[in-house]
Image (tube, rainbow, N blue to C red):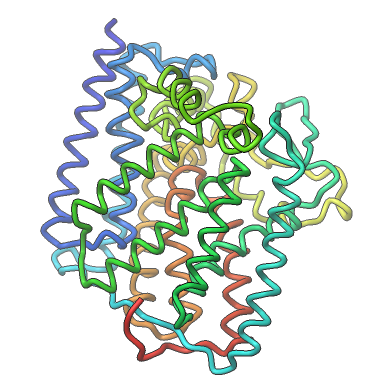
Length: 441
């Protein structure tokens, strides 16, 4: 079909532009823990690999689910233009602040030290208890028919809101990833962070939901290893391990109840793998990174119906924190564009590129992506200059949630930032943390 030939051309154009920026970043020796490198990886999987896989499969399972398909070459051209303009403007924004020809410096591995170790441990234990309480409210008690222990009330639009539990309770679970990073940066005894991280990952994999949480912890450890080793990029062994982990991540994504079924004797590893290859074998580890697919569907809705949001989706940042006890019928979403009126977008994220385009069209894509790139350069400078523990820890929070920025857009990531930085504030202030001269992991 002609439309799929256009998708192939789109994928190749995306690849060419990605290679251009990849070569430029290579010349500047950008370390892997720089935000730009993470954007490059995510963009490659979601916007270079995905259109090529859609072409190879002669279709997209996500388009089948949503019920919206590109119907003309014009749809493909416009979508590709928006994707690549957004991607390139982020790069321009970063280098506008950092300089276009200056080599990007590496970060030193920086340990932290508490000036009041007793208060530090009291604070860590309290936040850990709160974190596992939030995890308990979120996951434990769910059977093999749900990954979540709480219930939702579905509105007529298809939007879900929590029932019989507060979002502030479930949000406490976000303390745990940042506590894991704190323990790694402060503990002289490596056994403590190892036990904490191992138990945390087992609990999250058993829960099946929020796989991102254990990904971000491993990502932070990986970046710490690169900094400590004085390397910009990993060796081949680390790359192989990363592919193995990506495979496990994808398997759990296919069957969120995998570990529960194994523990309950309801299934076996071989059965789960057979089901995985049958259902996801054609998507080459991209089933959970279908950014191209959902972006094209969203952009088509916006363009075909002249449905711009005028930034209304960002009003959620003001509405979200208000407890439902105060505002019982507060809206879950504030976007004036109701995507579910046009297709089945329930429970889907629409990607950063589509989110910023929806606001004011290409104008908002250019401005907002440029500002995001500028902000990424600023955050990297926080880690480079090390003027405060709070700023240094924000770098860690920012870098581990890059995927959330690219996948969810500019609202959801604030949820992770805010609750992570609440933990950072209390631990750093109560424990009186400062930069240490100690070396080693």
